[in-house]
Image 1 (cartoon, helix red, strand yellow):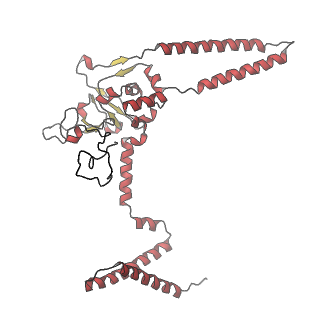
Image 2: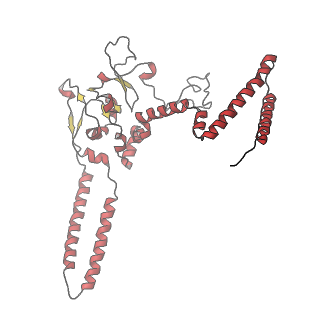
Length: 329
């Protein structure tokens, strides 16, 4: 992800990049982890490991893109069909906000508990002073609304002296209350803060996620800023998922295997298919005979020879077409 080759920069001065000749001296966006040295997982071993006799599969973390043995993730991985992506222990500690989502979205796993320190820690986010003041303000607004409703009820009582005036006041108050409700409903709500206000379990393990979990992440302004600071903006991009890359690879392979001639034939009706096949066979036969003469004489085929062949071929084709007669029954 976001990786660029180092050929042509200050690391390899004498090697010019054939894709991007003009390059900056240092690719600051590149991150070189142990994978570049053939080492993987927290055990820092190669894969395949000739000294490892335990059969185990490697799982890639979607954040750091390192590969890990299933037995070194702090938890027993679910069946491969039950999850689509994994976040390793180190990245869960780095992206600590994911623990709030894990309680609701992550695939449950069997945790390996080796000591009391490995047991889960229940976290409860304390309300800040600003949040408490905001809640008091909201409660004050609710109290004011109830007071206005009582006033409306009093105004709605029958009166013989100023009935029309009271009705107009009631309409104005109703409109004002409706505007307040609409304004409140338009205020965006942070999904992360809602989850953090509840209790959730945090463990020193990797987490496993289903296919659509990224779409559930909050995209409010504060959360997007946090993603940027943690350099994990890609988490909100559903085209960055493992499944999306696999589907793209499958689609590219199918495109490469596709025969353009067969695609053209399939788009035609029966008569057009027969005509195209006949024209193709005529061209193939005449071109083969024409080039065989050069092979027998040992001469080089030049551009003007090819142009001359196609001019003659088109001329013969027009003569055949002009001799054809069409009859209508």
